[in-house]
Length: 339
Picture 1: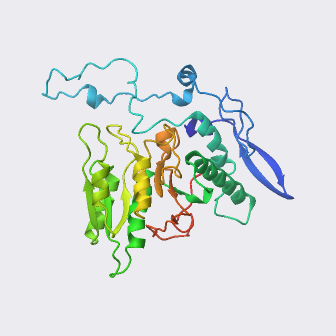
Picture 2 (picture 1 turned 45 degrees about the vertical axis):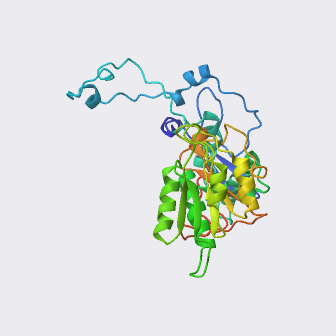
Picture 3 (picture 1 turned 90 degrees about the vertical axis):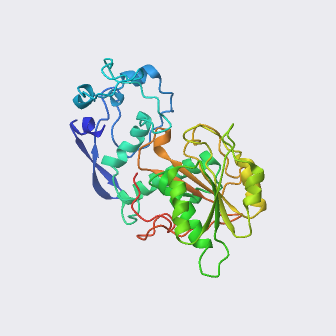
């Protein structure tokens, strides 16, 4: 997408920022939008992006072709369900929005100034470039926090996506509360239908001596049995990790019931909400969620960016970071943030 932008003629404006001149690269986004790449915020109200608009927007167009290897494959496999050699002209319809979504052009519009003009490191706090980037990051943090009902924007930790958020939640909580040979907190509860990154994180903990209970789900609904969950909890249970909406069968778990039970038993409740975010209302306070994983590319955002909600009060959730570095994101997730 950026290639079409970078081909356009660049103009440099000299701006004065508190007496210090600095050059900012300004580029036109597209011929129809009439916008320029500047750090100034737009006051234009958000409008819906219609299907007709999407079809005419070149940023959604693709020149991808079916590889010759697929068209000319002489595989002997035949079946009444085989569609080989039955390709139609044009591009196939994409019907897998649970896997990923295209970047909304409005999101691209909001991001573009910080990729070319205001490109500073958000963790550089000694000059205006860093201040501009930091303001953008903190604004985004507030937006995510308000979307899920967080009590403070500080409860939002940016990550690379839901997979990292799930790993940080499960391993981070287990390592913090299960420290020391004398610690009795060595038990985690999850379900057999979780995302692979959750199941693999739990298996990793088992290799470290933790005990993990994998609850079955009801065959008719895919939901957990609350009685089995209650029975599985013990005095050494650290957390329950159950996804909000299943990525394969679409099951919505009883989050409020799970959260209420976990709060009563003083057990942390983590949920992978990647498939629920932006599609159904989420209130982490009402649902008593302590840790929640989110992903940007599931909701028309960029790939490679996600977030983790970490409760700060009643209870205050503590995590051990997965890796070391500059101590960004309150020491939980080191590394320069994309913005």
